[in-house]
Length: 193
Image 1 (cartoon, rainbow, N blue to C red):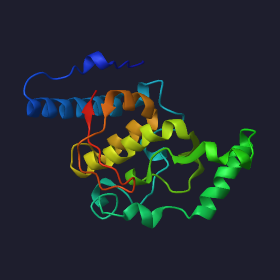
Image 2 (image 1 turned 180 degrees about the vertical axis):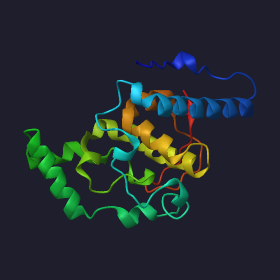
Image 3 (image 1 turned 120 degrees about the vertical axis):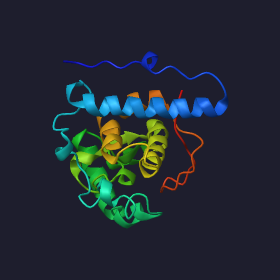
Image 4 (image 1 turned 30 degrees about the horizontal axis):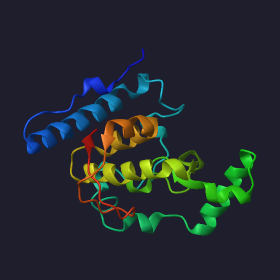
């Protein structure tokens, strides 16, 4: 069984500005809930994407978010050193037939970001991401943890949403307006486009 989601399923709210904001946040939560519950049936779920198989930091769970991802600066405490990430990046480049001369074209991306408790150095959680798309994903990486910390999403919902298909999620969600305290050092919020 496949589940298809469309932007039409989540129309923009009309009316006063505050009512629209509440409606849009409700739409975001509904979208992510559907994505979470239907995830196993969706074709965008990577192989081995069961919740217990996701490459996550075992110390980060819903019960510990206040001491981990919601604590200012926490991701800096788990981020691998440059020497480690540089080595991993070189290995990934070689696997796809590129050389170290191509390093500047890519960011080493944590698919589930550290700000959502993604595993810092698990190879399943690391990929080469062209810089041309990094800015879009960085917006989600700043926005989703804030929604988790504010109690608007569960940690597992946010992880699964970004793991299954972050590009689709980015098309559905725009991040602007929330006060975000992530290592991305940007201010974003969430609303439907």
